[in-house]
Length: 165
Image 1 (cartoon, helix red, strand yellow):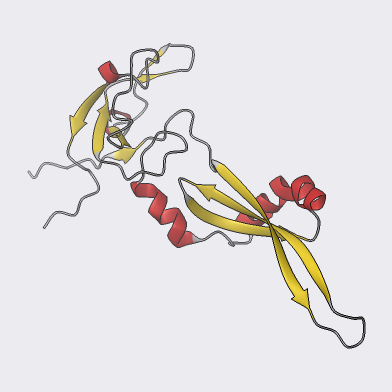
Image 2 (cartoon, one colour; image 1 turned 90 degrees about the horizontal axis):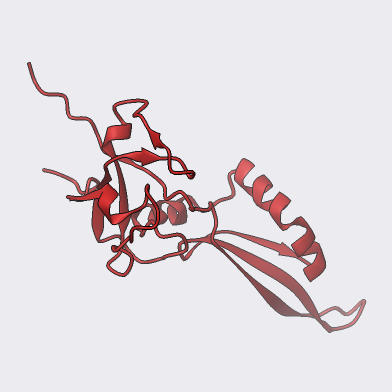
């Protein structure tokens, strides 16, 4: 009987946020009009990012309107499928350190799951025993403060995402 190979499952960092940066710019344009006259017009654009990749851009004619509705408009953009899927896919190869846009270079199998309060969790499925995280060279040292995200709770593995021939 052939051995069944259980795939490694990527486990998000416990402090990961869906988006980690918002950059707002004032965008100006010149309006030519024979009827109402020529003038400069202004609007504001928020680039909503994850790991350095712009996932969606949201605009408004006034900064206060943009700020007041930004969270709601991000939700709506996601529901309407307006996220940049290619940008989102590119984030999958990045470091799991929240906010880091570097490519992952080291991969760790997580040895045991813990709650935020430090309680050990029993595996709930065979996938829990095959969870991994990935980090760049700068963030490969995890420290010993957290139980879940600590050097002693990881073992180095080969890149589980690399294609095998």
